[in-house]
Image (cartoon, rainbow, N blue to C red; front, side, top):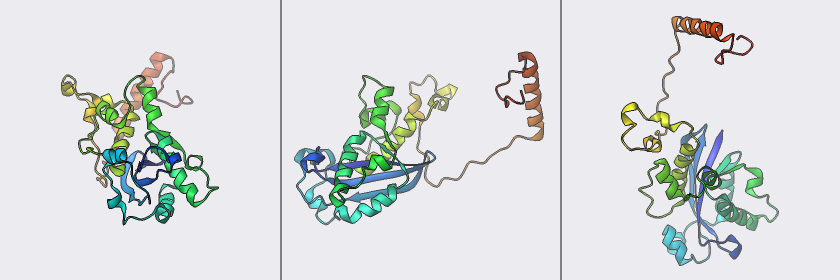
Length: 239
């Protein structure tokens, strides 16, 4: 399963008012593992950036003056996300801007959400934590994800952080990460989560010996005898 965790920065809040994308950041997950294959691009919006937006992301028009236009990077971006599921926090915002940019180039172009499945982590967080703050910083605190480098918003950094948050939100029994000695130290299960480095060595696979398999089957036979054949660890046809 290939997923692309995506974030954008923009000149302002409303694509319908002519605001434009100035940064796209994406990280790739394959089978829930970060691959290190990311996409990052600054873009010249050919318009002024709202002062309020600069205060959020710190990106100025002067910095973007020599950066490519969206039309120059669109093909590479589309190729990068092709066939993937998109993971976005507050997806309507980013998709609204991306679709507006793409439709400037091709008016009858299909919306991204019609060709790529989309997971909105804001919707997911609101369902899991109703009545609580569910912005990215709040989720980092809730799930123990390190966002100490996030003094300003940045598309690639935010995509990396969101990937960690998404994996923590959808990881299941994170409490199993706590050992008995950790249980009373005041840390939440999320605080035990650490990102594995890209390209790390695969863990060895240790298979059961013949003696262990024989002992296991004998135990299942005993359970089957005591339970009238109800052994959930076996195929129903064999139980």
